[in-house]
View 1 (tube, rainbow, N blue to C red):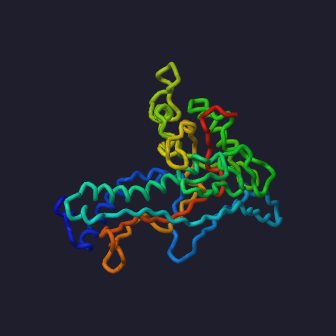
View 2: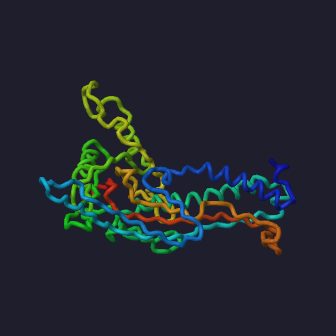
View 3: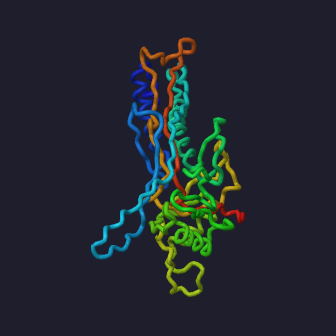
Length: 337
């Protein structure tokens, strides 16, 4: 490795940096991106910096048609609309002349691999914070900017009275009293699925909920895993009683949910958990620019004249928005009313 990094050619060094970058970037767990909670949309180049997402509902049931009567035209209701805005994220590092000529390869590798993780980690953090701050309509990011995380009805993602466009009925997707995970809490969450999942006309909508998610609190993780993996009812005294929750949901552990805006641990959110439908999710991740390495090259001012350092940069561009809240149910686990 030392001989490989002890290079004087900028082009050769840049090729090696590419390899180190990709190995490090690929090693970052893309938990939120691959969770099923978000639908990933690749945005073509030169197509603007916004995307508009909306939902459209039809009626759930056909109407009676008497003999020779004209069939009634089905109603279609435009739901809410949400605009996604592109943002770019970046970090630079310098590889000094001494690092690349004096066999300081551990420092070179550390800088390049850390750079690769930073862009991927920021994308993961931004997605996780849609849940972290989902009881509010905005939050202030680590960059000091106000981030709009409201749904299309201008309410917070997790709320007790979401509105509909074609009905005065409201629905809730935040479990009353916000219990921690237990058999009773799971049944309460599934009651929300059965009774509080509606279309824009206020009609009951039957959709598959296939994901259960939480942060990385050990007790919460172990409780959920017990329910999903045990052969018998984990709270039953009879070993012959079956566990109705076995393999019922895909479990997604989101380690960045219980964090502050700057990515520090936030213990007040350690018990967050919920159930979601990947098929009907209206949370979107738009990719304008996949995370990538920006490399110095001859003639592009990649070498600083005064310091002789070679500048490398991590770049990425994406946007996030959530149209509706019907596809996700949530409890903060803190017992709040």
